[in-house]
Amino acid sequence: MALPDFLVIGALKAGTTALHAALAAHPGLFMSPIKEPKFFLTDGPAPARGGGPGDAQTYREHVWRRADYEALFAGAPAGALCGESTPFYLYDRDAQRRIGELIPHAKMIVILRDPVERAHSNWTHLWSAGLEPVSDFVRACAEEDARVAAGWAPFWHYTRLGRYAEQLDHLFLRFPREQLLILRYRALLNAPTLVLDDICEFLGVHPGIIAHVPRENVTAHPAGSLTHRAVSKLARGAVAAGRDLPGQAGTSLSRSLERFLQQNAGRREPLTWEQRQAVLPYFEDDIRQLERLTGAYFGDWLQPRKRSGGLVGARPAGQSQARNGRPRL
Image 1: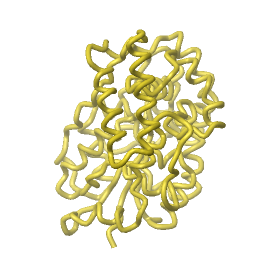
Image 2: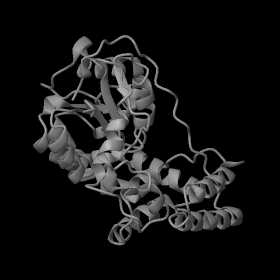
Image 3: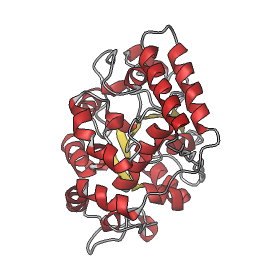
C-alpha cells in the first residue's frame, strides 16, 4: 500500500508549491508528481459543477480514486518517505478527519503567511487569470459571505482561509502536536536553508542536503482596462463551458486567455496600508487567538508592513526554542 508519510497541508498562497519542489530534491524524500492531488478533500468524486468561475475546472483536477492516489507514490525509491502538498487540507475540517482515518500517523507541515498578504495574493492570482470579476481587493473580500452562500469553492474564501487559529485549533484536537510542524512563510523566503533543515529533522531525514527554495513566480497585474474586462469575461465563459467540453479543451482555452492577459501586464500592485486597514478586522481576533494557541508572537501581522525574518516571530518569555537558538512553534 503506497500512501504518504507526510503532507504539506497549507496555507494556500504561502509557498507550498516552492516547498514541494525543494523537498523533491532530497534523496530521502519522494514528492507526488502531481503537486496538489486534493485526495482528502472528498469522499468520492468532486462536484461536477461549482458556484464560482473556474470551480468546475478545478474540481476536475481532483485525484479522488484510491488506486490513482496510491499510484502517485508507486515510483518512490525503497526507504524514501512519501509526501504530497495540498494546501486546502488545513482549511477543510473534513479533510483533516479523512487524513486521521486513513493515515493517522502522518506528519504535517503548515506554513503560515500574513493573512492580509495571503488574501491579497489569492485575489491577485484570480484577477490576473481573468476569473475574479471584482477589480477592487477590499470589495472582493466584502463579497465573500455572499459567495460562500452561493457555493463558490474554497479558493475564493479570501479571508476565511487566513483565519489560522480556527483551523489549527481543530487540527490540534485530531492530531498530537508532535506530528505538526508550523513555520512562517517569511522565514521560508529569508532563511530557506535553516527552514529546510528544520523540516528534514522533523521528517527524520538528513539535513544539510537541500538549501534552495525555487523562486516563486510573481503574478503580473493586468490593468482593469476595457480589453481586460472583455477578455476576462471570455475567460469566465471558457471555464464555464469547459465543464461540458471533452478532455482538456476548456482548460486549454482558458489558459490561452490567461496568457493573453499576462502579456504586457504591469507588475503586481503592492498591498497598501489603506487596504490593510480595511481588511485587518477580518483577522484581528484570530491573530490574537493564534498567539494564545501557539504561544508565539504574530503581532507584526497587525502592523503596516513590518515583517519578521524569524521562524515564528519574536519569542515571548518562556517559549521553547529549537536548535541553534532559533524560535519555533
